[in-house]
Image 1 (cartoon, rainbow over the protein chains, first blue to last red):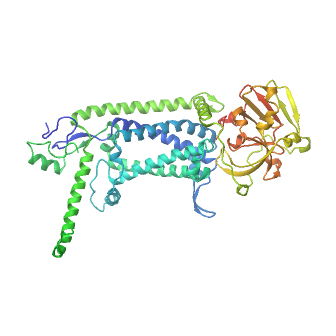
Image 2 (cartoon, rainbow over the protein chains, first blue to last red):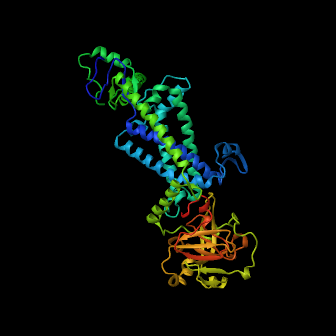
Image 3 (cartoon, rainbow over the protein chains, first blue to last red):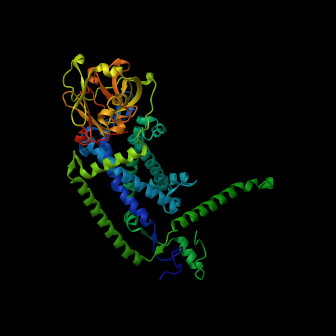
Length: 253
Length: 281
């Protein structure tokens, strides 16, 4: 039996490992439902984009990188599938939007946003997270997520919101007029919609790599909700010195 | 701080360092309390519940796979899985009820650029424009009129500079000139009565579109005869074509040969090839 165990929900100080709730049930469901929906949306969206694939990095007539090389289109089966791409995109889009709205509402209602939204120290701490990832310094202190996670999770949420808004602007430019004007008109909305897709795809790639790097217990927390929490130095100090009044510090913080 | 005497200045760096250490400690504690704000359970209870969670996850993956397979193996309805076709039709009724009849923005004439040629179906050979007529038919297929271009020229003429949008993704601001379909329809409204659809086809029947009445009677739906003040050339559908900012270009049929009122939803060339029938913007 661990000493210094609080009754009820809070097990603030402990000298043996406990399992701490990290991701609530609704967050887990919405996260995992979003994953295949996002893949379907990107895949069907690229089939639509293929029909008029004009975007490229470059200067003037010189294209350093064109979206996308033929080999990529062929490999992903994107060619000559505009009609099917549209049908999937405009059907699954509703599920993507509903899931995203549910996630946003839940994040606000449950106050879980406080773990994700960066605060005024996050930018500096995020720099230190990057240095830590490069093995240049020790890990800065973090809450449930480190500062780099908080910033990128927030940015990707904003990108998703812009993605959906530009999507609607392209989908119904007359009926939703003047929504397209917010994004520089129909073609502006189209470019931003594409850019957000690339941004989210890059996020997804880094996210997957970080999940791989972080190991099993971090990954399984998104399935089970819980992650094992080892007691740290502060626990030992506190438990050692305040055995009689274990619930004193920090409870309810 | 204002009460500080000058001789404390040499202690300043020390204070700053202490402040920083204090801050770092407070920050670490604040974040630690955040990380530990969730409820905790004993490890053995966690092992049991996590088995359940992974089982649920496995069922979820199988369920998603079954759902995806179900969508993919649907009987196809005009080359799109049936369930997706139903969603396209639901989308149509959602948007028709939401904001039908809104007006697309119009531009100034100097913003217009020549439109590209992007479809020649139903226009295999050039036609003799002087011999061209359009057949107007009632829902029963009875010929109501066979009109030459002078009829359309006698209707009130409008100029409209709008953004023409192709379903492929490109768009261009085009300066159209011609008559509104609603003014054409005014001549037949009494004779055909309440009719929900209009079908149009090229003279050879090689290209055909269907329109719902609300869309075709929109004031921006134009029977165009001119582009940028000049008579249409044949590649752009001379002598008479549709133009609108409110549907994709696939609906703006060129070289109209037949205008037929219809009680049934008319066949549509691209809708039969997997696209949305309504194609509204």
